[in-house]
Length: 359
Image (cartoon, rainbow, N blue to C red):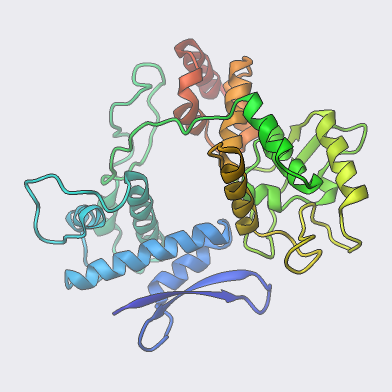
């Protein structure tokens, strides 16, 4: 069965939805669709799309191996990971094989599959005993960076997971950021860079900003709220308030006075020169903007790089990692530590973990 991942619009909410269809009959594939529908209540449309793509791969793999989705085991999940990496379902090569996907992409696919079965276990569609073997039992953990520092806590981990290479994505220097801002001729584009750099927002959070989320002349802050965006963007992290510098709000006011179109829109970033004027900007427009800036300045830059720059700047200024975790909207302090351990001393790790345990 060849599956199709199809974008649609929910007629009741007018929100973007993703459908998994049989490529021949165009009937909805119910087991996957029910899971994606449940995900859409808490995850962004982009995340739902990614999980839909991964489960489409899982279904393809099951067909190649002539397996029923309700009758698989951990060995099949391991074979799936190998297939994603090499494209081969049966033969294990003794020679080096060029990877077709990164470890991160494969782990995301495994997460999608285990989440899919967790959902069906919870809904009694499949047997708990059979599919719970996808996870380590509670309390059993692998040895990691924090072994001997943090106290043991009951956890549940996936049995199948590839080791991802630890590589810090880098950050921008002050002079590079200044060069990028000066390379922009429009106030909106300058503001966009300053907002990313001064707040560490994700693109989905930036695109979802309302004018009411931006402080006035006496309140220097931005409030991040989880809300649906007509173009599919959504704030991924926790709702939070982020302090910003006065220069950023001055640039925002200049944007409203000199460039913002005469339309009634709650959104800060809207189309002005391209597309339907006044409509919320799409992520693709921002990606194109940074591609052009990279070509123009010779600086390899993309939106998320400003987030890493923001976090690194705070940690080097001795901001407590717990505070950085809040400002970034991370749900777990471990996420912050894993990504930015290059600027956190081991003494900070101990104090942060002790504080986390006390809470």
